[in-house]
Length: 168
Image 1 (cartoon, rainbow, N blue to C red):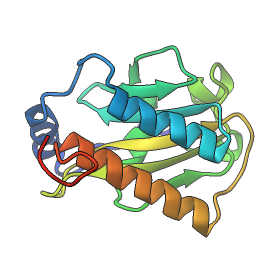
Image 2: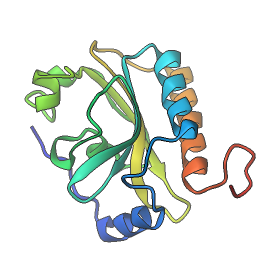
Image 3: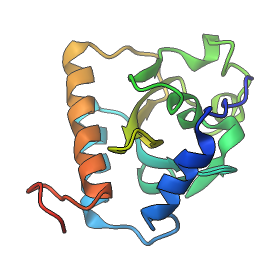
């Protein structure tokens, strides 16, 4: 297993995440609806809004997963935030970065992962909107576009613009 890399801008990224004042807050319907829609739209058992902190990834919203956080070191989302494009793992059991990851060889038995980095207007990638399956698969162009739109909605909610595009 390759531990999730640390982005070059991690200190600034973490500061931007802290300034949102969202870590460890109670569930909120506006985020829950996004992951519920993602899970249904892509027919996957797990969908998350994951925020990547210094030592952990914390789930602001989740479907299909009881845990509210995991170690950053084993997180797929930790890999996703070092790029700005979608990060897709077609079959984690065959991917040398993840094949022996505890989340692959044990519960929840991740095989497919795709994460859309949540990038704030200043450029900080603070987490992902991701969907996870227990079967290998690939997203087509339409799936990628839909996930990108859902990611944009999640970022708008995070920065307080809401669905109408005006401050909440």
